[in-house]
Amino acid sequence: MNVVVTPAARTLRPEKSLATTVFAVTIAGACTFLNVYCTQPLLPFFQRFFHASEIAVSLTVGVTALAVALTAPFTGMLAETIGRKKVIVPALFAMAVPTLLAATAHSLPALIAWRFAQGLFVPGVIVVMMAYINEEFAGRVGTVMAAYVAGTVFGGFLGRFLTGVIATHWNWRAAFVTLGILDLFGALAVRQWLPLAVNFVPAKHVFRSLRDTWGHLRNPRLLAICGLGFTILLSLVGVFTYVSFYLAQPPFNLTPAELGGIFFVYLLGCVVTPLSGRFLDRHGFRRTLLLSFSMCLGGLGLTLIHSLATVIAGLAVFSSGIFVSQSAATVLTGQVAGRARSAAAGLYVTFYYVGGTAGAALTAWFWLRGGWPACVGLFAVASLLTLMLGLAGGKSAAVGNFSREPVVDTAI
Image 1 (cartoon, rainbow, N blue to C red):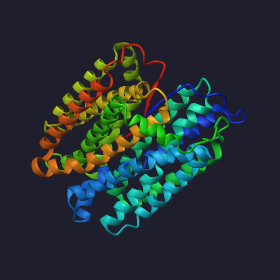
Image 2 (cartoon, helix red, strand yellow):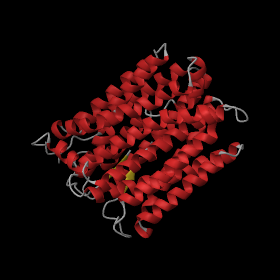
Image 3 (cartoon, helix red, strand yellow):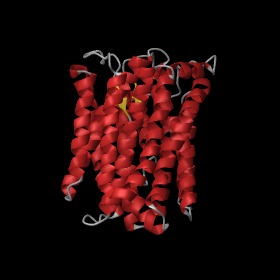
Image 4 (cartoon, rainbow, N blue to C red):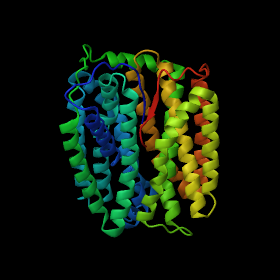
C-alpha cells in the first residue's frame, strides 16, 4: 500500500519517548505484513496437499488482498469517528485470531475463509497508522514514517520466509501458529508503548468522506493514478505468486524454505524507496516512470533464463522497478487530489488491493495456457499499462515539485 505524507502534525505526548513510540509503530507495521502474503512460498505445497489447482490455491493470496480493498474505506471512516489507537490495537489483536484458526483448516475452502478474515483487519493498521503519524509527530513525520515502512518491509519478508522454513522443517499449520503468536506479542507491545493520539479531532460529519470520494471519482487524472496502482499490485502479486510454481518445477525444484528465501529481494525496498524519491525530485515524474518501466521489463526478461541466480537477479530488478513506480504514484495521488487527500488515499488503496486480487486470479489463466513465459507476457503488458496510465495522470507534473509531499511506500 502507498501513502502520502503531509505536514499536519503538531505535538507528541511528552511522557512517551520518541524511541519507544517509533518502536511501537515499527512493530505494528511488521506484525500487519507478516500475514498478508505469507502463503506465497507454500502454494506448490498446498496444491499437492489439498489436491487443488493453481488458481484454487492462489486464492489464499488473492482473497486477503480483496478483504483489504473492501474494508479500507470503511475503516478510515471509523477511525475518523472513534480515534486512532482505538482502531489500531484492536485490529492487531483481531488479526491474530484468524491467523491462529487458519492452522485448524482441514480443507482449502476453510483456509481461504480464514485468509479472507485476516485481510478484514489489515486496514485497521495500514490506513489508520498513516493518519496517526501525520497528526502526532510534529517535525518528525519523515523519521517515524520511515521506521514504519521499514517495519512493513521486514514484516512482509519475514512472514513469507518463516512460513517457508517452518513448513519445510515442521508443517504448514505450525507456520500459522507461529505467525499468530507473533501477532499477539506485537499487539501487546503496541498497546503498551503506542501513545494515545492527542491531536486527533473527531469528524463532525461522518458522511463527508463519502462526498469527497464521489468527487474524486469524477477526476479523470486521479482515476488514472488509481488505475496505475491497480496494475502495480497486479504485477507484483502475480509475479511473486506464480514464480513459486515456476521455481518449484524442474530445473529449479525449490522447497518451500528455499522459495521463502527468494523474498530476500523485498528488502531492497528499504533502499530503493528513498533513492526513488530523490530521483523523482531531481528528474521528474515522466523519467521516473520510464525508469520503472525499463527495470520491470528487464527484470521480467531475466526470469525467463533457466538459471536460479539469473531468475533471482531478475526478481530483484523487477521488484525494484515496482518500488520506483510506487513512489511516483504515491506522490502524484496527493498532487492530483488537491483537497480531501485522505479520501483520495482510501480510493487509491481500494484500487491497489483489487489489483492484488486480480494478480493472483488472472495470472492463473495465463499460467495454465502457457506457463511462465505467458505470465511474463501478461506482466509486460501490465507494465506498459502502468506507464500509460502514469503518463496520463501525471501529464502536468513538473520536475522538482515533489519534495513538499514526501513519499512513503509500505510493503507488498
